Image 1: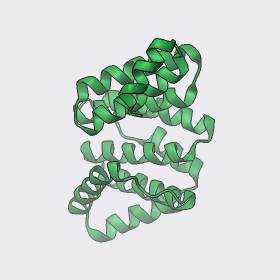
Image 2 (image 1 turned 180 degrees about the horizontal axis):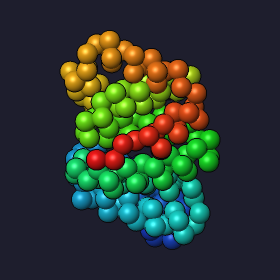
Image 3 (image 1 turned 90 degrees about the vertical axis):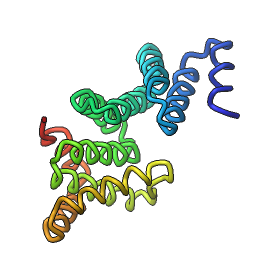
Length: 187
């Protein structure tokens, strides 16, 4: 069943928890098709509902989605704020796959802001976490990830790139989270 059909059903049933989740899924679909206005609308409603019913994972996902929309629109301070709040929630929930995805988003943000070594360290940490989880990058994230890595490789000397990558790969999970939260340079 499509995410849009689920939305209609959950709106009819007034099931706010399921509706928050379906809105988040609809936001992801809109984001994947570059429909940023619709994505933002879905994520905003999902965030509001998830806060009302106390569903922390959906709240984190909505924040991550809003951060992605902000990143695509070039609103880097908003993207950072959303990613920081999402990462804090995922850490609290010990939801490591979402931590890996958010570290990748922080890496994309750092590349956009020309903090390339920082980005590569974050991407190395995310890759190590994905490997530990046995959770490869899903196809819908592959293009943006490869573009980010390509931009980073072009901007850095190979030795510097490999050193930053190794540093990220060696970071324990909590250290990687702290690195993203406390060391992400502001523009």
